[in-house]
Image 1 (cartoon, rainbow, N blue to C red):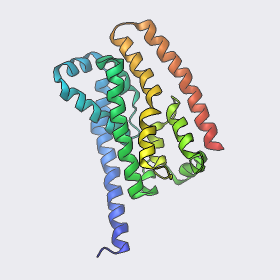
Image 2: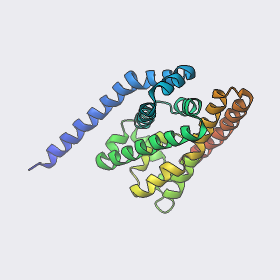
Image 3: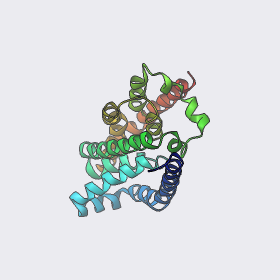
Length: 223
């Protein structure tokens, strides 16, 4: 029979293993992955030569990026638009994001706040007051995921601490992230078809909307 002390020890070991995993993956996979996708011609050539496996590998890349929350996701989304086109690129990104987000959500439900503290201090967790509004938490999380510019992958770790059911979060992680993903993939698609003026317009509008989203996020964090 496993005692309470052994459970705590196993939990601590699992979290330490997760921290090590994040560090190793972030350094040896995350950095080269983002650098690779940031070289669009090479990435497109790799996609063309890999067929269906290229799509599967890309979905796994996006999942890794969501789990290792400090690895930026925008290069992957822009690269997806460049290599796969806006529609397929968006779908592949959303599949990876949804699977990665759901995995993070379930891990936080399993290990609790200690896992979240891998990325955040306890004070930072407490400062996200909008997540403590039990009546409106689902709507507020949807809003934060819907607005471009908010730290969605990091927020995923927060959401696991709330009362939101995993089925509801599955919908939020998929539907609410469409606007922020599709703006990046459309911009990448314009780059891939050498429509640079349209790409600049899309990225400029995205930057403005992201600034608004970041402002809203900071304001809600203080309320």
